Amino acid sequence: MDNMTPNTEMEHAKQEAPAVEGNPVGPRMEKLAATGKLTSKNADMHWLYEQSVQNAEVEAEFISKVFRKELGREPVFLREDFCGTALLCSEWVKAHADHTALGVDLDGPTLDWGRVNNINPLGDRASAVTLIKDDVRSVTSPRADVLAATNFSWWGFKTRSDLKEYLLGAYSHLNDDGMLLMDCYGGPEAQVPQLEEREQEGFDYVWDQDTFNPITNEVVCKIHFHFPNGSKRKNVFRYDWRLWSLPETCDLLKEIGFRKTVIYWEGADADGEPNGEFQPSREGDLAPAWVAYILAFR
Ligand SMILES: C[S@@+](CC[C@H](N)C(=O)[O-])C[C@H]1O[C@@H](n2cnc3c(N)ncnc32)[C@H](O)[C@@H]1O
Image (tube, rainbow, N blue to C red; front, top):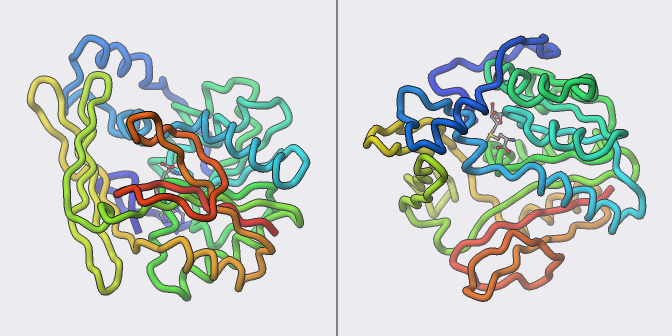
């Protein structure tokens, strides 16, 4: 499985992550980024990760919107599996005074970082978030309105039986009219070893599709960061995944008992570039690389 904390052994004991004190790194990182002074030595890797690959505020809004549309009520309790730094949990409870969240992740130091940087700054609302350090398959209660597994983390389950075990658990962790949300990517470019470099404010983010096995659909991907002074942090995060396809995943969800699955496909702007807006679709399009959400309803 992938690990958000480089060079750190995962700890497997189940426990509610303890209260951790400390100063959030955000203000210092933002200042360094704005002045072009981030380097491999002073940059915080979780902060870089969040800036590069997460848009949790938009994701929290999207979850509420599709839940309302499909189920006709407001979701309240979100469980975030593979929560990492629990950014989605924090945006979820910020979005509405009634919202509560549970984040589950194996990695203690990553949860600690999330507690200091994303949860403690919520002030009075911090108590609306519970973080548990454990395997997502071992945390069986309480039941949630929404279970979110994002940034492809569920791809760590590489056999059908392992994925089925996880999804059976997900089904039983949802309320009777609950919703499972998972993201997925694909397209011909997802199967080609290549580097994709993107400029962020104050640093470059590099997505490295290192290997692809066409027989097993296994991929190894890595994240590197490059800085204005020429310094680099390589292999900061490493992912060993199986690229699951949309139809095989939806078939499995139906087999498990979800009554309905819907694919939300990303739209494109006038130049054909992904626009970050997702709509229900039955056909998708032939983009060389695409991202979609799989929604499954109990
Ligand atoms: C790709 S990160 C995703 C972080 C965050 N959810 C996001 O959207 O960016 C994957 C996370 O899953 C955690 N993880 C991997 N396997 C796990 C498992 N079986 N149970 C709990 N956490 C797991 C890792 O520790 C890591 O923090």
